[in-house]
Amino acid sequence: MLNNPADILSIVLRGAMGRSGRKRAKRATRFITGNGGFLTASTVLAAAGVAWGIYDSVKGQNVPEVPGGPQVPGVPGVLGATAPAAFGGVMPPIPVLPAALPNPVLQMIRLAVSASRADGELTGQEREVILGRAKEAGLDAVIEAELTTVRPLAEIVRGIADPAARKEFYTLAFTIVRADETVTGGERIYLAQLAHQLGLDPAAVIAIEAETAAKIDAQSE
Image (cartoon, rainbow, N blue to C red; front, side):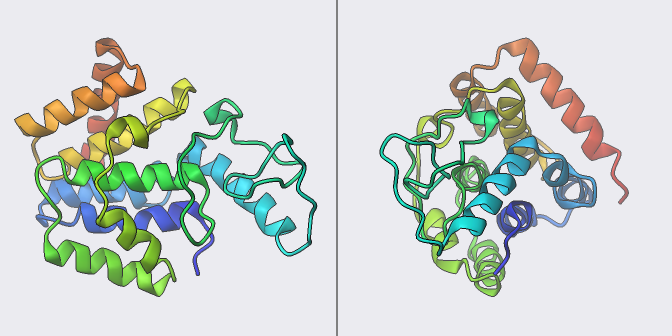
């Protein structure tokens, strides 16, 4: 099983952005999943990886549960771990699915699925690609549950307070909806709703989109 948050998220992203085969879609995929790309540089996933490492180091050690004590995301009562700083030290109340994925990773997976649906449901071929890769990683049950569940944006991004985390979540969604050359009217409405839920003002949205578009276009064909 994969144990790197970026690798797990890439399972969904490669399927969600592999729709058209157009050059820009390939550039968007490289920007997100390539060496030194978005996933590698993500502070949210870095924090999730640290939390996951803490979890891996204590699971199976019969660490006593401490009421009210700090916790590893998804592992109630583990003493000595805190939630990632990007979430203000408080994890959002989102159910943890099997495989003990950190909540920030689940949130990004859920946002990726949500953004890929902004212009319609994933095709059967896209779902097959995603689930095939997920099965190889031992995460098919987790990913399939997300593909079959429609979640409101307010639930997906609940608890994201850090400005850097807000920017990363918006960047992720914008890259997905822009991957097939254009942003449709429905996708623009989706992005406006996401910006509202993340508390991003118009100036911040314009800056994030311009920066992201430039990075996508700078990728090799």
